[in-house]
Amino acid sequence: MTMTKQEEARIIEAVLDGDTDRFEALVRAHEKGIYALCLRMLGSEQDALDASQEAFFRAYRSLAGFRGESRFSVWLYRLASNICLDMLRKRPASPELSLTMEEDAELPIPDTRPTPHTALEQKELRTAVHRALGQLPPDFRQALVLREIGGLSYDEIAQTTGLEAGTVKSRIFRARKKLAALLLRDGNFSFDLPSISATDNADGKGGADA
Image (cartoon, rainbow, N blue to C red; front, side, top):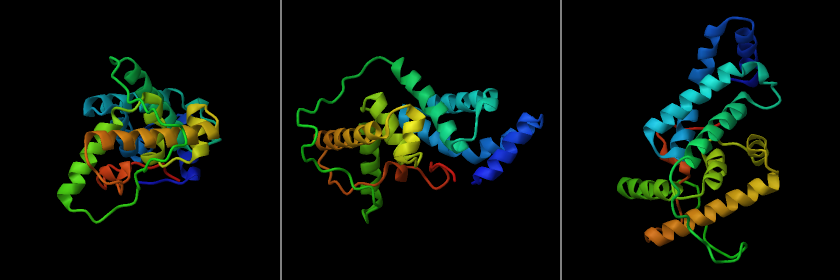
C-alpha cells in the first residue's frame, strides 16, 4: 500500500490528536520496505525483524518531532538505518576488503538492470551479491542499501545520514567498487548484475513511497 505525502500528513495529524490506532496504517504502508532495508543491512531475519520493530516504536514515540520537511518514509528509513548501524557496530569486527587501486581507477560496476539469465543463475548471483554486501563496511552498506532498497535520491540519503550529497555519491560509488571487487574475488561472475532490490520478491521489495 502506498500513500501520498498528504495522506501520510493527515494520518500523522490524527495520531497526534489522539487517534493512535491510525498509526497502524503507516506501519502497513512501510513495514515491508523497512524490513527489506534492515534485512539487507543486517543479513539476519531475526535481527531485521527486531530492527524493524524498534524503528516503528521509535517513530511512534517521536512522531511529534516529525516536521514534514521530508517524506515520512525518508524519516523512517533514517531511524531504521541508524538502528541497523548501531547493531552492526556492536558485532565483532570482520575483515574488510582493501582496494589498492586509485579512487578513480576503472573497475566494472554492476549493471543494475534485470538480465535474461536462467532462474538458477539468477539465484546463485543474488546469493553472491548478498554475501558480498554483508562484507561491506557498515557506512558503505547503509548508503548503498538506502539507494538500492530504499530508492532514496542522493539528496534524501544526505538528509538521512547527515552527510553532504557529494560525500553520499562518493560513498555509493566506492561501495559499488568494493562490491564488484568482492564478486570478482569470490566468483567468476559477469557484471550485468541485477539490482540489490531485485533480490526481494514482489511482496517484500523495498522503496520509498511518494
